[in-house]
Image (cartoon, rainbow, N blue to C red):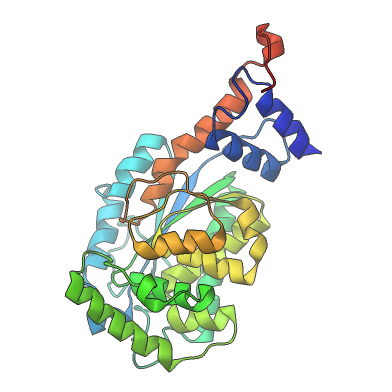
Length: 334
């Protein structure tokens, strides 16, 4: 019922049918989620979860591991890409240490939820045991629940963790059945030789384990920050929030959550298609239609922050644009 009413409202704004393209699709989706003809976005928030990765010790990234904690401090000092874009668009930002191998000073602005000092090196043992994976999901859910209880109805996810394109590649490979060679990309800037080395390392990891469930797969190949995002996504769906996906690493959490609960896609908008080649394959697998194509590969939730004003515009046209009847304009139904 509400879907047909929304379609009628969209089609009777003073514009040719379909002329606002994806804005119309976005408005329809949000209206259906909120079950109203006048949907709204309240207290938008991006949660950035940070953690280190044992697989980074194998040389899968050109960046040293300490950049994880250095960038987290940059986040709370307001100097990163995610900071400038969330400030620009009035989005709340929370930075959470889920598993960084560093002791942050008290009262520095980083929210402490340190569950470990990074994951295990997957060349030697699974990234996480099942208990740690479940706990990370539970803690991620708690952060989303807190935002919901504070009046937030639209949530995005970002991440920070040197080496985390490796777990993202493995999750895509295992869940979507995509060739690992097609999943492995440059990450933070590997040269062709570095990409080949990364592929060989991840091939060894992929062959070493055979998890049977989505949870086991997440524990074996994932990261603490990815598991926290998975728990957060599932909690956001439980509370019927609008959920915004970022790039390659964040979308690996959406693939995992989808394997656990496919209807999370009913509440999800994909902010962009990144320049990391595996992200295109993730979006294809999830049948996601990205809002932006800007060749981003920064992570941090930056794609979410950049897409947010487009999402706002979709509701502004729906709620504020005149109808043919109120504007006394002849409607042409073509």
